[in-house]
Image (cartoon, rainbow, N blue to C red; front, side, top):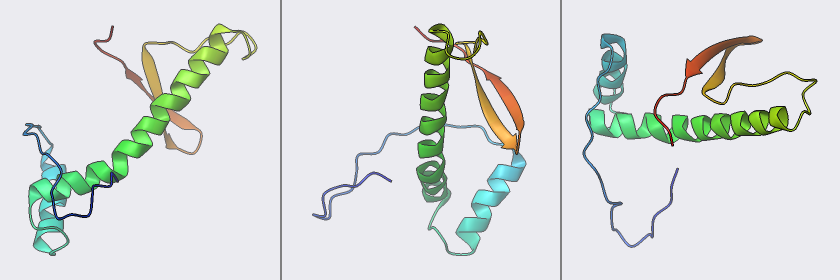
Length: 102
């Protein structure tokens, strides 16, 4: 989680809009109802603070795999540069197609 100066100032915020499934909304509401966080926004920030570092590492790992694939260090197996693979269960991966880009 990012650290900010301990001078009482709050980090700058930006307003974004997201669409969530009913299940995710209910999970966020549960955190609020149980007093873990004061609002849905805080619940989303909490979830992101745990999930984003994982996603960042996953993307870095994917970039390393792509680079190894390009230089031929993976027994001629090529990793597509336009998708990422997320391990859902031990040994089972979900492929996510990258959209947009450079």
